[in-house]
Image 1 (spheres, rainbow, N blue to C red):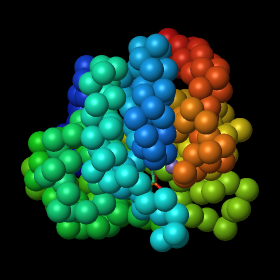
Image 2: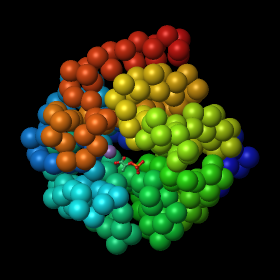
Image 3: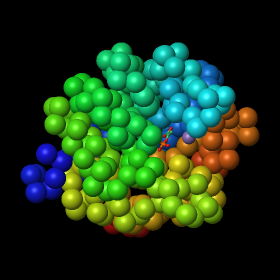
Image 4: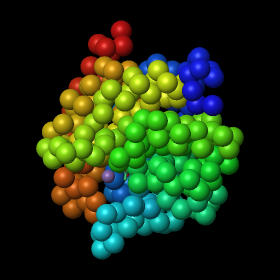
Amino acid sequence: LVSRKKKAENTIVEIKGEKVGDGKTHFVFGPCSVESYEQTAAVAKSLQSKGLKLLRGGAFKPRTSPYDFQGLGLEGLQILRKVADEYDLAVISEIVNPAHIEQAVEYLDVIQIGARNMQNFELLKAAGEVNKPVLLKRGLSATISEFINAAEYIMSRGNGNIILCERGIRTYETATRNTLDISAVPVLKQETHLPVMVDVTHSTGRRDLLLPTAKAAIAVGADGVMAEVHPDPAVALSDSAQQMDIPTFDKFFEEIIEVDRRLKN
Ligand code: PEP
Ligand code: MN
């Protein structure tokens, strides 16, 4: 169902007026984790000032260590909803448990399925049964074919509002947290009709590489770019090393929209 052979024209996933897949570049920014109302609102305020609409933030965090911050859970979703409504934004947040999908629909505009859960088939099926866009991230060690099959799980249950997100894969390279598979973007665009985004934060794990990789993503035809922004990354409860603070984000955004203008005109 997700194959380009089944449907030639691009799928457009509409989220609060943003038509992801329409040929323009759409941006998703926000903290790695929702830590408090104030922290989330500070980022939302910056998004609103830029005319941006899509806010991300993790409430259920799939952390490598059980001793690391696990997220605020339902309280995090409630904070996101409140902030989104106050700043006129749509919110994207990861859900890790199939049993939480139905409740999450009340709070979220987009359900994120994270890299670690790309092959959690029960979660994919549950996300396929609700009427809510899904942002599906590529698994850490997933081939493109496995990634496409994961999207097929969602679509085969009736939900075709899917955005694919390349977020780097695990290779032998240690200079970056993951290896951004930039060619996955045109491959996915050729093989499926779904919009494709690139998460530059988790693919690189390096703040200094966010801008060059975001440029590359746009140049190869990505429908959107995701990056993490935190008002004070030094004290962030997760991904402290790669989130942008607000002044860095201001500069990043100024440069990326300029590149976007040049590339898309
Ligand atoms: C995230 O976007 O918050 C996240 C955990 O990313 P990934 O699933 O790509 O690791
Ligand atoms: Mn993160």
